[in-house]
Image (tube, rainbow, N blue to C red; front, side):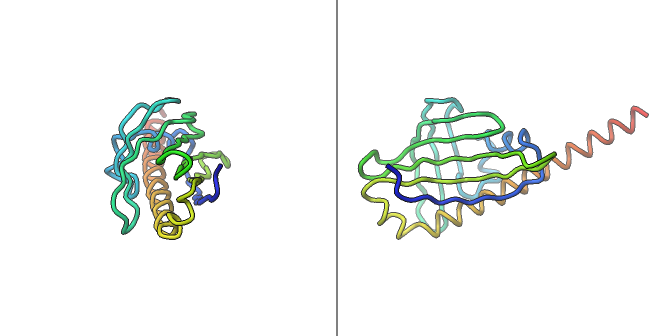
Length: 161
């Protein structure tokens, strides 16, 4: 069913809960996410989302994927497109624990359908760059908030002693 895949990964110095918080907080996307500018809808399996995506020099796209997986601190995955057989994409965000306060964040899209070769010929570099930019922005945001939470916790401990 799926012909091609684009995968981008980044290591984030934060715990899975912190990364998930930013990934699942759709209302804040316009503040930090350079690729997915807005998501409206419920974060639950079977729900339809409305996603506004901007990838590089390509025109903004609005689409309505269906949520396949919404597992807090682990995975968010949806599927959408024009419908088989023309074009369909399965998009996932995966959070893997590497150790204490360290995760691997992977974003991938599996593309399928008759229009896939032509669409990716025109847009693959923009899609890959959009994934990298979003991953890096998420890394910066999660690490900054994680660090501020650690400082606040240390200050509370000092006050107790």
